[in-house]
Image (cartoon, rainbow, N blue to C red; front, side):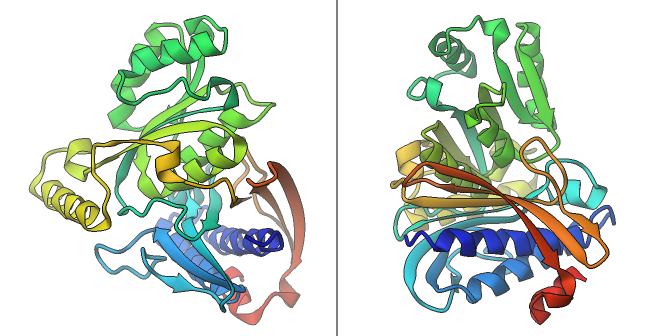
Length: 335
């Protein structure tokens, strides 16, 4: 991909973050998500790419979202795109930390195409690369990572999501003396922390969304980390209700149609084939990875993490936006 696309993609996540910020603390996560989606779609359609969403949202119920198979752009470089216009819609609605707008782009054919469903994820940084295996119990993985990092088990720091489905796992790790940080949402940001030199996070484990999983895999490929994933139908993650079973069967059917097997362990190379990827994340609310949007009158400041996998470049970009000079269509979503 052309290097100049990095700035273009950073502007896409900036726009989505600005649009989501309009709904910060207003208790309406659906409006926040819709606004960020519209901003991201508008900006991608005005970028010189031949883009295709390979994993996104909304294909089951035809919701007005960036959906799988959607084609975007003015024409140009052929790219696969994985998106989460707001990772942390609930956190945005409630004014909580760590909400970000994220996008990953890669060469055509480099990203796994999969439905919007649940994914089990195990993520580590470069020092523990090659030491994880989702075929093994989590306990064995924890021991292997500790050994690779030359740490005692009780010295490990694990991050996960504070969800009922993780309560048993969290309790078991804590009983072994492992420190566990449980975030309300946001496993992409949590995963990136495993690769950051100023972070004490050693491992990320959770069952979360597949779109966020492919975005995370792209970042791990760019930062020389490692990841295993496993697609899980809804009824295997949530209660065995008729509705969840129906949705789960739809997800299984979609997996078969797209040539990917649910419950199969996916290595990093299965999810992202090339390190020629670009990742961009812009903070909506202040968090462990990025500062949030800050507004002072007509001036709005954003912070963006921009990663280029091909040359292992990591940049943090502080941008100031003057609302009076925003593109009119974007300004409608922001103001």
